[in-house]
Amino acid sequence: SQELEQSPQSLIVQEGKNLTINCTSSKTLYGLYWYKQKYGEGLIFLMMLQKGGEEKSHEKITAKLDEKKQQSSLHITASQPSHAGIYLCGADPSNAGGTSYGKLTFGQGTILTVHP
Amino acid sequence: NAGVMQNPRHLVRRRGQEARLRCSPMKGHSHVYWYRQLPEEGLKFMVYLQKENIIDESGMPKERFSAEFPKEGPSILRIQQVVRGDSAAYFCASSPIRIRQDGELFFGEGSRLTVL
Image 1 (tube, chains in turn blue, yellow):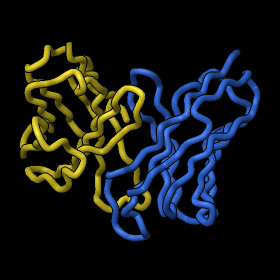
Image 2: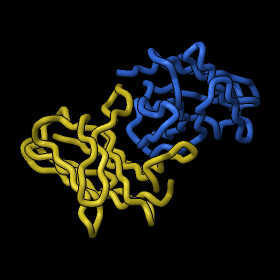
Image 3: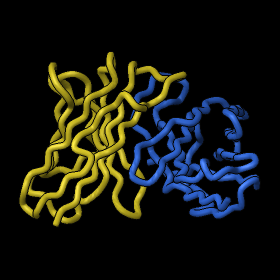
């Protein structure tokens, strides 16, 4: 089965600083999802990456998928307290360019704290 | 993700009792997924249902757990004779289509089960 490892497990930064969270797979990644979760709440979809070398951005968050390295990174520029939460990467092991459904394998999560 | 409704948000049960968790997918969605997030563990897939059909239950514990998604009404995750190890957050997600190469999973806010 596919396993996803996230690093770091937790991260504390000052407001305004940049940061990167990594997600590494034991198998080749054909589809990678990033979600944000606040304590006691549900998951908020951030981005989905499918192609090797693909990069997407939304506001101050950029995600990249490096298929050769079996790794994805999530980069936040000029962090704000609103970015605080748990970031989860998830992969659909069946999404090898074909049909897929919502059976995702998730990493353990990265807890982000942003001090004002 | 505001459209996926889960209830109750919090549920307390004593060992041996039954827990029923309900999930109403977003309007127009006929695919529902249940996930479990145990304390200190990641989010794990449990079961995938379409209306009146269980498509994939590979993540469901073999005993005491069952799920259904009737033609009318919400999807229900049922846990019989709960034990303390069942204490967790249970998330429901829905999607509009099976092929999601450009789609996303919509998650609910979760139901938090505490077993005393």
